[in-house]
Image 1: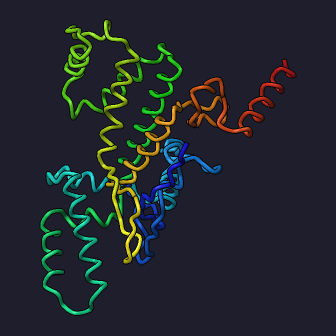
Image 2: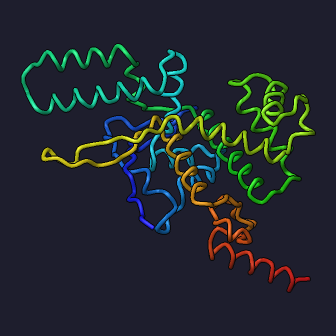
Length: 309
């Protein structure tokens, strides 16, 4: 089987600080670009979505540390396009115009009307603030951490077919998407109709099916911010593949999507001092711990308890 190379998916990170109820980038410190796809859980590193879900959201310093290491989530950009009505597709097209105008600027030091026209077109289509994220609200980041956890909990329940936990997670996910899709009753009705059932209640809809549909709706919404792009490898010809993302959040959900497409599930580590989420192959669903360290630590704890008893 052919193995695809790791695509580039660039994001920018810069040192941050806690400033009241915000995380802010440090003035005068340049940003550094990196490939988000390198944090896909391979080669011994933890998958970025798992790192994000493991943040203690009650600790602003833990949030600051994540933002310094991986960059802002892109929440501010999402708010800007929501408030102004600019869609993600518009953002992608105008990002390309910006790149083209920058390229022209690098080729010549003389004033060029074409460059000015390109910059005018770009600036009229989308607010400049969207491209210069320098702060994000701690409350907003906390909300996204919790939402990622809820999604991972739902995938865990679906993978393990643990119907006893469906109800609570179902209500939580509905709370996430209700602002966009109407009342809970309306959502139940739509799902019931899609299954050939007109009942407004959930009783006749398989709970795991409904939960799975909600997960796909939320993840698919995030995948709308990801686009495959084609670039030139050199001036002499040849092309390279890459990806473009509207936000770091979209990129993390892409990494999660790729795990699921490899026939993997998400489980929660059963170590009492860990409880982090980790990917596991569907043929290894009996795996209880995210690492050998957690397995050994939990075994030692249980041994000491038995000895004490």
